[in-house]
Length: 310
Length: 270
Image 1 (spheres, each protein chain N blue to C red):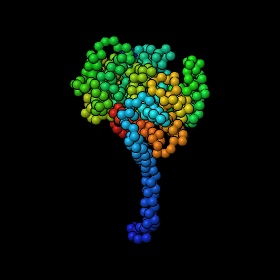
Image 2: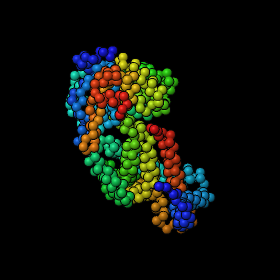
Image 3: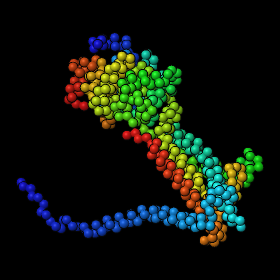
Image 4: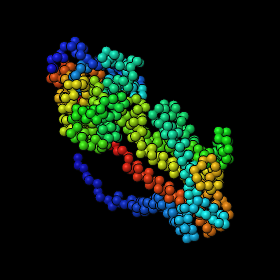
């Protein structure tokens, strides 16, 4: 019995060759186009912000912008002291983090280390529901539930205040911290826990001294992401914190955050191209710079402190 | 030295750890059945056998590491100085402080070399001079000369062999009586392996060591006694491990009583 090698046949070599080559090209183009949409959008936003900010600073000096203690862009004697808005944003975000960090981190530790699978199957969806609540609902929750509650504890607390808004922003970012921190804690290799247990560490000692330090970079990254979210949070602060630009860190009075200002001006009848209109962009630019700085810091921190176990 | 243990009565007398009719289950599956053996003081005992024969499982019973695996269950008795290791009155944390463990893959904590050693001592309420303890532990683990100038650097920056010796130093630092080693050299190169084996020889003066190994030459080099485990498949397809033969190492390798042992040590299977 002999074997014959297959006869070289040209027809075998080119079925649909042209068509499939053409399809490959088209598909590649489509994917690239979609990938570039986000890049182009970002670029567009940044460029708009830069141009409008540039125009703004033709009329208002950067010095006044950074040193004025009043923010009254719609008054006749307009003042543009950005620190007024920044202080309000810092205040609500700080309150939010003070609320969210312990809640989120403890929830993450509970979920990843202590919860039985039954408890977990209840807690996880509950947290996800919390993450899915629209912020406008949170806003009214702050205004109509948390503020009256706080007024019982703190007599003289105003109807709009940074405290209530900050607490509710904090609640809204708990799921973010909890779920990202849980991922970070979960990623700590089992061998490290075993190593600690084998030295006679209790569960608490293992978690505090070995697991949390090992997960630190991930936890910090989740917190920074949550801070960015708190800074950019709009609906809750616009509804519950008030519309009153005041410089200072008093949590019991109405304040106006950067995002709340943008909402106020955007909803009004400010003519396009006016100075007041450009303030939206300059405040937007300030927000953008702050969150970008935070993201860069987070990126650096994670790279610097991430442990490689392999 | 070898003939010391040919008399089983003498074996029992010096036993630190004693397992009697131990069965280990994972969930409803029996993983290891009916293991009885004694671990004598200041000896090195090697557990050898093919994969899935339960040697690591039995090892982890001795410091109750199996408690950490959900669904794991041990019946039979294991005693440590005649106290039942699995009695409710005994806290596993307390047991692990006296029976240390070194793992297959080096697992230094992501902390400095110094802190890796100090951690165990600190959680155990060590009151003495920490610098001294760190130095003496690292010296005993034969790694002091290599790390003395970089105690503040991360333990993860060391080579694999150094990491494993750091882990041994960490285990020694809390002065356990027994050190369990679960294939401590399987992730190491031959030179590092040799260093760890030399170390085991030295540690034998002070500690009782149980070592699981896949490497039969290693077992014959480092151990005084050897336990050979084997596995049989059940109808459901899972394996059940059991102890075939336990004797001094010389006998296991040169004059085994069981055919299976003979086949395994001569390389006919496994």
